[in-house]
Image (cartoon, rainbow, N blue to C red; front, side, top):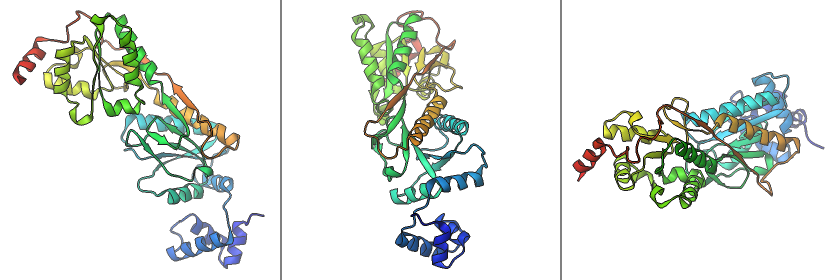
Length: 351
């Protein structure tokens, strides 16, 4: 039979509130008392009820009448990222719709044991693992305690259920829309690190399309590591490959290229595979808010079926992006309009 917190308090000779505060690591009691209570609780085999803990935590923090449980979004990335904020907002909205609380937790330097205890103390039933700082990495946690899902491909292990953008489809869509506007030599310029975050599906999609093109329309992509990926390298690549439109990962590269050439952004035909709402470019909206909602749906389904731990057969849910057109991507005027006199003068000065 499970020991209640009231019974534990009676054995320790302390009040119920003191024991509760100590187990939740709250500053209302001294560090010495907290350590004593935790030690004796482990010795006596006390195990907190996660559903009851989650219920009390939710009542204290939000008072939601439709409460079902508490979820956590774990992240190591800087909160200033637009896509991370959209991902979290989508997850938060879906959690509220389903009656869950959602906490955003910056895990920082938490060790696996401490993080597991923290999540259990807060009554967390399921965790969303946000994108990791490195394009390939891993995370350690006592997975047997939680339902889990992750976004993207950056967390290589363990293999849990994941929600990802359909990068391959995004590349195909961008290529097709450029082709409809009359562009024929469609180039790709991208950091290798960004491509790795797509599980190399962006470059795979591009190479697959190139394979079926006439020789006159084939363009070798520019794939470089971050230290070598620069506006100067892009200019050199444009001169050699002569694309009439460029597919970039995001708009940062476009701004740097325009700064080097001292030309307005609209003078360079390009699209982006990760289009932000404020971008004055055509490209793919990856619908991060929808991805956040699907992550919560995955956790909710696992919790409903009482599934915890690393799944035997991880499910990958691919979310299609949306093409967003923009006047900056006008109809192609000529196959070599990107090789402007300004660009040629820039190349001559470099030589």
